[in-house]
Image 1 (cartoon, rainbow, N blue to C red):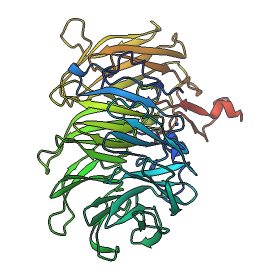
Image 2: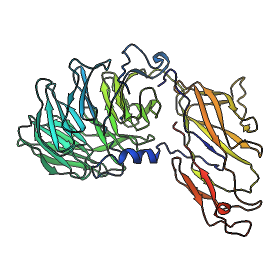
Image 3: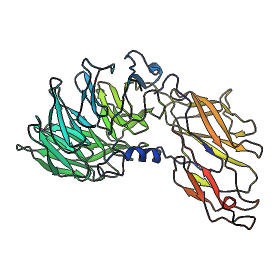
Image 4: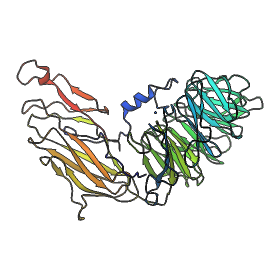
Length: 516
């Protein structure tokens, strides 16, 4: 979880006209920017770029003895992947999409292999590893490749894929709204489009069985017959958007359920019964199961370590945060197991996470505020409350809470412990309020320290929104959704002078957001 030298958390603001908080953990504007690069007719969810410095496997980025998830190695990418299935693990090598190149990194250190990667005839979209050590790829422009590491790759025509798998002597691809496509495993013939799905995000091949995460249409199960055809067996409707699948054991799969977290499916016989659910913040785009049976879920801003010993009651063990300025890189798209460890794929990096599930630490998360505008008289006063939640297993301690401008006032309940401002037990929340008197500046910051190894120091920019109404006038209360830093305006208010000056009848609030 933790990273030495973690920078202050950016872009978190307290809106002095805001009074409520709500859990919105994905910046919609940022998701829109990334999703706009994807063209697979799947607009409702992310299908989703410096120097190639390598941290050696023994150079720990975070204190592993006191951290359930420690970054053991990281590798920067020049361009990065375009989707969650943009890397695959071989026997001792990690194959990674990096723009129009296939990079090959050694394990566990993530250093380039001898000979490095290979240039591709288009942008690398998805990868799958074959049992014989080969790797198969889909690249933009309708090309599929099979690379053995010796000589030139075999190339054939095939539709752009979101995910790949091998079953029944064929390569199978999830191709979004066009469903499934397949080609002979040796790519001796072009791919054939089969349909069979409406929103295919990824495929999971288990012997002669093919499972499909069909996005908004749930999970589908097929058997590959002797002729290489996919024969439908069962379907399960989606409750959100099913994006990825992984094998848990002989009788169970795990499914990443988009905005609904992760689920466990019982596949005994021909079934697809959902028997366990764990709700998680964000958009779950990938899932993997480690050698110890623990699973990890990539959820855009975070990855989550989950215990599924009891398949009916999955339990979250730890979280690792990948924000814009994380030392390990931006965001978490994909997950691949590496023994008991896990490899994460972000927009500009690959990171190896060591797992120590017995360590218990606090986990700070700041509830993101809605815009809750209640315009007041122009007396220059306002107050806003910051909500801190502890999602870890240990007690969260907040110390040294201050505001840079002494004209601002802090309000919080006493912790009854010396030198500790807030004591927040596991799965509980604490609050403090920042009050702006008329003599305060328009912009300042609040700061504090915590015992969360991910966030030892936190700085929160504070902005004061000066009201533009006359004394005694109150605008109607309005609740707006997350705006990701953009401006919301209430129009139609009277100019208190009786004129028609637009500036006098507009109330403007600028909303920033917390990355925690």
